[in-house]
Length: 405
Ligand SMILES: C=C(O[C@H]1C=CC=C(C(=O)O)[C@@H]1O)C(=O)O
Image (cartoon, rainbow, N blue to C red; front, side, top):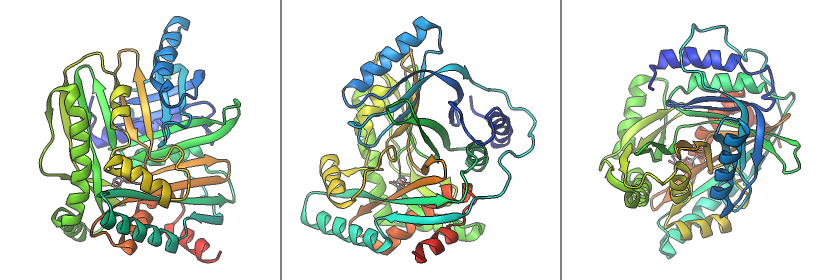
């Protein structure tokens, strides 16, 4: 069901009110233009990796059915699918569907302040990494790689997670907003993964399949005229069109063998996502085999060149050599699937891993021939604003704290 933005905002404010103040306390939240889910309590959880992912999800769904829990798995799968996922069957699943009057804004309060900032790599280290990536593109068959940065903040107080989710839902009504509890494998609370991704990896509903690869970015501008000029520049940029084409082509090529029909528009459109605008391709299709699940499709697609590169194997090797940190859940997938094989997985972007007062943010940029290290660095800064602003942290404050280190 599609909602108008106004109706979605109203419903999401109500949805956020059902979350306890401050923490998520075992709640799993996933809200997108097509799905609203709040899982209350955790009935079953699993941390499968690699080849065990599909089988474990099938087992979780079967157990949920036989034990009387909702037969839905919600959670996140890391960028490196050989690392453990965080998957849950909630005790009770709330699927609020109907908009209600907008209530008081949750989460309004004093924003925390930054006590410490750590960056991996440093800003100059990131620009150097892009330069190394470009040299590899010139020297080898590699055409595109996505290089990311990690920002680790220590705040003076733990952020209000329910308020943060409400803010993300309000500001990004067209995005995939998520809050997933993390456990360290020993049953202990290891914080939450929380974010507002603009990118649909794949959705399967019956025999219909949808994907929305994004790649190619320009900053959004609050001034409408300047923003329109930015968008025109993005659409006219040969470098961004190339960067996008690697991604949309790869997603289309991966989905085609599963489909009876597939529409992959030749020309990208533009998707506004808060502080940035992206080149976007809306892919729709009809599946040939009803037996294929949303998770099968997501695992076949991941990592798309929106987070990996092209060719994929060369890009993954280059990322492992150059990037210098473990992405964890960032750039993986977050979403849900059910016992009918339906489901929706978003690319885990514009996210934070939050453990009390410690917040880890991530952002990356696609590097192709013609990329400029300084421009790519600035692009990651702009992407970081989605979470920094929602946390009430001005990006300039993060920059200042960084400069003072
Ligand atoms: C890797 C990220 O964004 C991807 C998605 C959209 C546009 C992108 C780009 O233009 O580089 C990235 O491929 C990120 O937000 O960390």
